[in-house]
Image 1 (cartoon, one colour):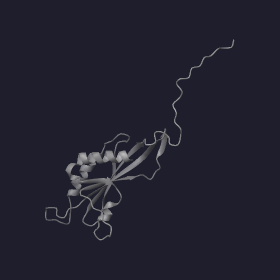
Image 2 (cartoon, helix red, strand yellow):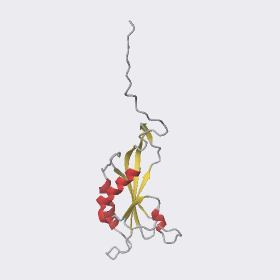
Image 3 (cartoon, rainbow, N blue to C red):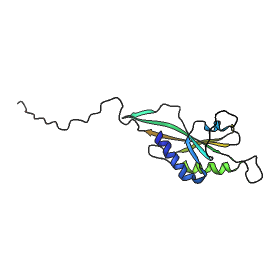
Image 4 (cartoon, rainbow, N blue to C red):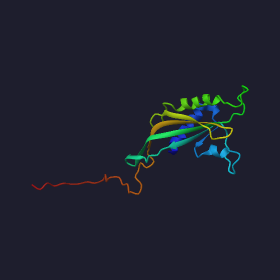
Length: 170
């Protein structure tokens, strides 16, 4: 999963551009940005937090290779907007243009070991003060070859210097 995250992160920074300031693995960081709590999380906005939603154990397909199928990748896209510039401080319409950039960055994209990303859902997250957070889900598959050589076994190449002389008994 590490390489898949790094590939997604690189793709998002490349395609979304300067609108994206921070990208990390999701760990409920937006919940800790609330100023009323003792523990606070701080990072630049606009941010995208990548969550791997997989309730299934990966299936072995041989030689230590495992496949996550299906694998849901959820983006948590967060931005802060105190004034929209239109005199309507109580609504943020820029979140829609921003979420479309993330959609275009990943829809029908794939990286080494993954299937094509297909958006399968999205919704707004309303549980945060002064933040607009949009969640977008993509479904794909991913072949994890981290254990390509089985662990705990002795791997020896076959003997290649064996020379047999056979004398048939007639």
